[in-house]
Image (cartoon, rainbow, N blue to C red; front, side, top):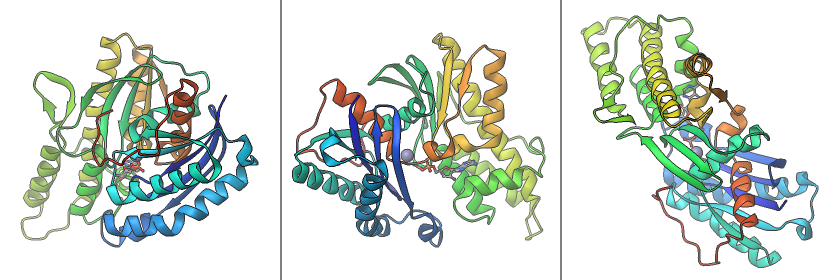
Length: 333
Ligand code: KG4
Ligand code: ZN
């Protein structure tokens, strides 16, 4: 059971954690969301600068709170791809420095593999195979987890990620950033059946999605409903949009689970917090004898504990990285 110190800095969260196998000993997340909210989205240059300021305190706190000493730490795991290159570089530089200083093994982790592993942390009884619906601001994928470290991407978005769609629709409705939580909240007082919107199906690719057409459909709807600046039925529009995304994602992932004989589905990433998506998945899973797992939000959104869990799996298989590891803004799982 390796003990891993992990670092995650691929986007706008500076995170450090210590995990022992599938147990979280400490987990620190320093979010930049307030700063980026001023600009309506993540500004890469600002994100990288903030990581520089927060990375050392985050690592020190995670180390201190873990109760472990350096001699008890077996390796250092770090997200190397995909993500914002300037942000990734801060985490990787910190990881390399610590590995050199304390003579530890370095383990490169793919960010999406980290998200998948958040399910392993949330449910210690979970074993592959299972289906993972990974929906965040940057990703929207349906992944078949065949075994530890053996993944097959079954479906992905052709354009916007699910969270990106929430953020863009919130912006056009004047609801601010990040859009997901506010659309979720406002939808509770709206009618999800008020407007019919396109689910973004891709012919011949039943697990893929396209959300840019949905975003355009919401824009056209607002123009139609308010040609001269009349007040918009925001709650009804938000609820109809949310219901469309929830139905699209739940239907596609349940279909994939059934067609591949999988009895467990896990939903991770920031959008997995969405109430409409959760209730759809719960209902449809129950109808099809599928177990649905929703890790707590602290594990769904970016964190380093999930990177540590992936790192522990790789280290126990002898899969380690050299000091020459590079960062990549794009990399397939
Ligand atoms: O996983 P995450 O924190 O960051 C990454 O993108 O990696 O996901 C953030 C995304 C944002 O787009 C945000 O709007 C969305 O998750 N989100 C939600 C909800 N909470 C966060 N989307 C829908 N409903 C929510 N309740
Ligand atoms: Zn993420």
